Image: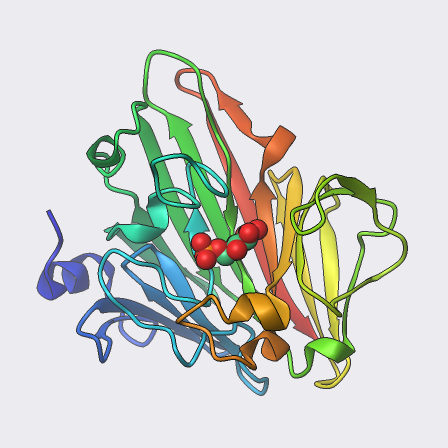
Length: 296
Ligand code: BG6
């Protein structure tokens, strides 16, 4: 059962740091603030939609054509793909977690760090035929950086497997002047051309890119040449990184993406996809984590 605004406020509000707000579409959001910046999280999908360190442009891209409607994730921010990544016969692409309203669990302030924890309702899976019992939480932590952690525990009596991603839409000023540093020498599955390939040098986004890198490196850097800024994407508990930009022709297939929007984002997704899918024994728990930091 969904929580009312009053219930959400009772659980989460902290004066000057965590506020429950209502978006223009009438849906509840949580606004985290500290002296370094702000983070806006929609309760629907536990989706981080804004990360704005003071003095810098928004770190996350949100499509100007995005529509905030119940049951569908917004095109932008950090949708949570879980418990599967990509298409699945007879089911929603990228799992059900991004399409349901999450529940408020707690919030706290420790020094400069403001955190928020939300839970995926236990019955969201059974409603779409997912058989396994889970406890899934998302913690969002704002300090001088943004940390997002997806914790997944097996509450059933048998082992099961999940794949997924923190599907981060990073805002850039000009995709043609953007490069991703840190994937040199990494193998990837090319979802545009098919087959396995090897990355040589930095990744330039100069065409449709849809790749699952089998990447365990701790951090990548997205160098935005036009904005003269670098976004560092650090990760843990992750065995792959998905890089996606639909470029010109594929963009036409997305009603919630303007034709030229591809120029202003690249998705760098902290993932466990393909062979990096995670098997959890009963009682076992894993954490998929992401840290975003802007450096000039
Ligand atoms: C990426 C996939 O993660 O998400 C792409 O690799 C997909 O293949 C993209 O097109 C967007 O997916 P969706 O379901 O949010 O439109």
